[in-house]
Image (cartoon, rainbow, N blue to C red):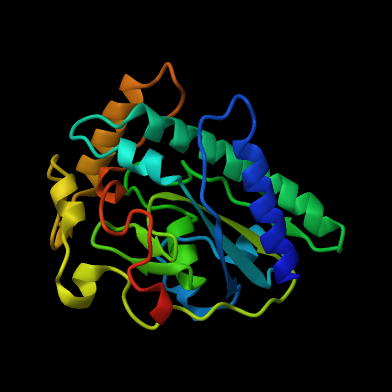
Length: 251
């Protein structure tokens, strides 16, 4: 079943990017799996459990849809987000939403029930914590490790979007990486993400989530005619972990 899921996701993403109204292009998605009863889910504060969202939940599928390198590099300049990054954020949220529905229909052919949480805006506006955090779910699933920038670094880097789907079929979980993929956390050799955050929200040893929220809100206002884009992305743009794994051969 894993191969069928992988093939379906890859084909769906490729077909989506070829639509005439879509500006965004992607690299090959990365997919991982977690047992719905993995103890790490219980450690997420104020977070829904897989069983809360799907009765009989057995497995969580997490996937990372990496942006094409030209989109990531388009966002390298200081200040406001690039138009390419904004389009990618908006269009990929729509992609994740439609993929969840399509995957549900596909899995239903094998009598597998599923639930796909929304791609974004499922968080508490006061605490800025998500009731279903795709990036934390992806970490539990073995999709990657967290960088200093608070984002997940996967085998395809960190420049992209994460989605997840809960199913009531048991599939073998993906082993989590044996070591850090963030170069700074591993050996102190990189802090490019901090340098990219010229707004001051991200520091070597701290992160101001409220300032980050405000920066994203400013971009949302700037690009409101384009679509809903509460986004920045500077910390994962044009840095070492944007598009490529630091050591995929050792994962």
